[in-house]
Amino acid sequence: MSSFPVAPDTFHVYDTTLRDGAQQEGLQLTVADKLRIAKHLDELGVDFIEGGWPGANPNDTAFFAAAADGELQLNHAVLAAFGFTRRVGTSAAEDPMVQALLDSRAPVVCIVAKSHSEHVFRALHTTLEENLEMIRDTVSHLVAAGRRVFVDCEHFFDGYRVNPSYALECVRAAADAGAEVAVLCDTNGGMLPSQMGDVVTAASAIGIDLGVHCHNDTGCAVANTMAAVDAGVMHIQGTVNGHGERTGNANIITLIANLQLKYGWSLVPEAALRDATRISHAIAGVTNVPPNSKQPYVGFSAFAHKAGLHASAIKVDANLYQHIDPTLVGNDMRMLVSDMAGRANIQLKGEELGYDLSDRELAGRITDTVKKREMDGYSYESADASFELLLRGELGMADDFFEVLTWRVFTGHEVKPEGDSEATVKLRARGETLSYVGEGHGPLNALDMALRTALKQLYPHVDDFELTDYRVRILDQGHGTDAIVRTLIDTTDGERTWTTVGVGTNVIEASWEALYDAYRWGLTKHN
Image (cartoon, rainbow, N blue to C red):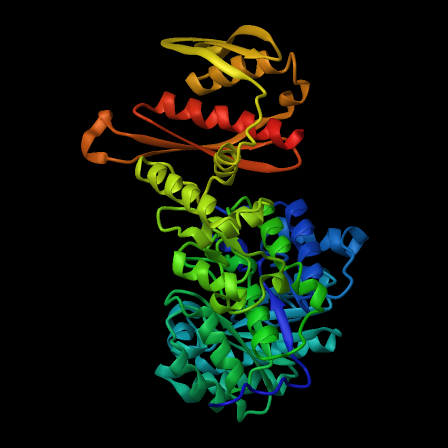
């Protein structure tokens, strides 16, 4: 079995979330967003942060100005500006876009250069020699101005297939002009890991340090990057959460974790890696792109276990079904409760929530209850709060905060400022019978207003409860509008968020059950 390669003396982790990642469909970043993300990237411990393309994008120009004026304090990372080689038929000294790179005051400049001969002809409409001169002129001009220069050799792998000697000449032109790194780009994302090694090896003969920039169009961006590292590159580019155009870029967090935890390289401080999950989710919050739950290492489901066989093994040794300790990347193991659950799942989930289910008979009874309810349409793997309420009921620990006597809701076509629905909830709590009417936009909002108004007379803190998400699924689609439906509701009190589930023959019935559980769980945790 071959060993992993030894870490080179110098290795660059280069993040391009703010530039290439921002090209993702539907993603728009303000200057404030970019400043916040840059701070998170610095916390992660990356070596370089590519801030954008000054001169080509007003937001990016403003970002570099803000950074240079002291609004961005980096403890580790170095800011890099991205741009293009000078235009055809001019000089780097005269090109305003090259000057914008210098005006950005970024200490590092990464320029993109054509390395595919057909692109030179068809996109730049110039000669192969002129393109090489554009590379040499731009690099030498920036180096003379005191900048460290990296060159992204665009479409390098595709260009190497068509005209290998010219693709290599582009790398040589960058090296001769004083570039520090030539980055081989799989711009269209069409490479496979087995194809990377020979191309990287051929380019390494030129003598310049090499980097790699991979897109994920074949689903191999991370694997291709790792293959290039095995072949000798010392500079990797990627984005947090794999953001990027089309199917995205290589995920920089996955790459860091692979190299640090699998290869044993020291790329970022251990404390920073333990913060990776938080940083990934924090950046997702800024970009307003929901984090991928299946993302390696830091995804919500990365260490989630559903099968009963897995749970039984994990009770013996957590590492039997986990490739690393989740805490190394700031994540955690989760046990999922579903119709696939065995007694071990229930016991481990109970332990996770703080309950002792070591009694095998008790755990078996709860397992049977869960399986029956899952058959009826409930899903507890995404609704920990409802599962905990079920658990407390089975353990005789259910809290009697309130008892709902009746509820009803009316909705119609007339939309008033206060909404189109009216609900009445009658309940008993602390020996009092309370009845309140709530109005809202839709039946669930009206029921929420009625229940909240009634409960806050006795439990004022329920006014802090806020519904943040609401999802409906039809379970037996063949029945059309007569189907069983499942609803999931996310609720927060500002400090924590919890999810509850409801099932019914109509969406209002199912929504009410999930809403009822949301208030019960919130009151339970508050007390």
